[in-house]
Image 1 (cartoon, rainbow, N blue to C red):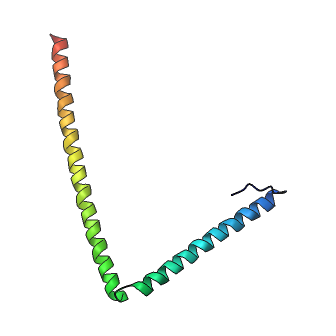
Image 2: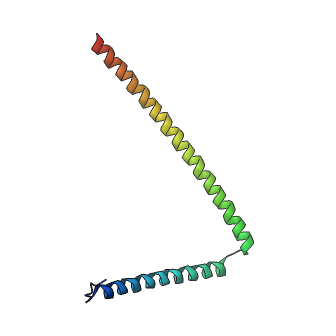
Image 3: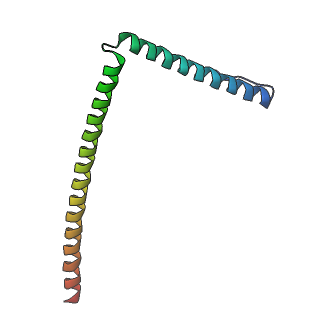
Length: 99
């Protein structure tokens, strides 16, 4: 956007407020149009669509939980292995210092 010169802070503030209102209105308009288009082109009736969406969302959440559990398990395993390696190295170094 081009830079504009305002002759008072109040005018600049009013312009920013007006711009924010316009952006919010365009966003709201886009959401309404998107919802209407989605309803018009939905292949199934509302109840079936909601049931299908809830099933898919539940399945996706379960998959995400499983993936997160696997990642946490792998991370814990890797940290335990690193701990054991560091512990062995520290013991080796301490023994070499003692001797």
